[in-house]
Image (cartoon, rainbow, N blue to C red; front, side, top):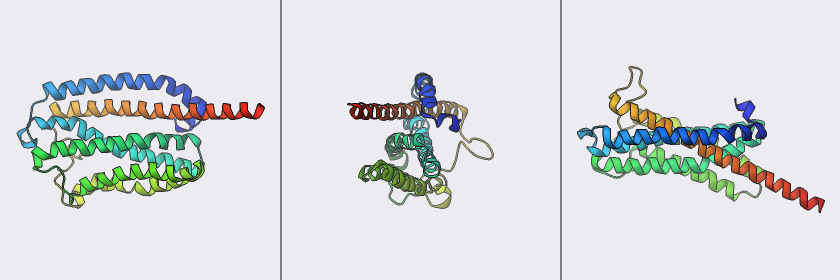
Length: 243
């Protein structure tokens, strides 16, 4: 699939239909999940009462911000090794969306944490700090690219930062197992099966799937805008040279 979509013309043809389909299905799934979260799912006294409903935004955003960073690092690796232009375009599109989802993860985590743990933030919590580092990695990637003189230098510097920063993703995942943390251990992906009741698990997974499709559509939208911009620049340069 990657080799097929590495061609800009094939990518544009594919994404032309993929974007509205992902937006439509993702919005429908996310809307259903939010209906379940707000009006069907029961509260939980051990998780702050009704504030547990923040889980259906917080947990998918946590999964997605890690997935987006892996996408950023993977796209950067492909560009660094094979110089696929579309891979660099994908990395540039992922970065602002990843930063936004990481900020959403941090904000909803604090909102959920205050009534549950009695604090908005804890500086010595390994998972909180590793997610904060992830947020700064996204911001640093965009700032580093903006500071470079040429696009080639920007792509190379950004790719190196993205690949090196990928080590933070497994730290986020396993931080609760390695260091002390207010966060509980895994309750969805476990060898013995999910520890979460189906009434919570099903809307959570549907919310993740819906948001994942919306994120994919947003990344494709930004990529299409970049490709259109490059095509417009090339056309303008050609007309100027002919004139």
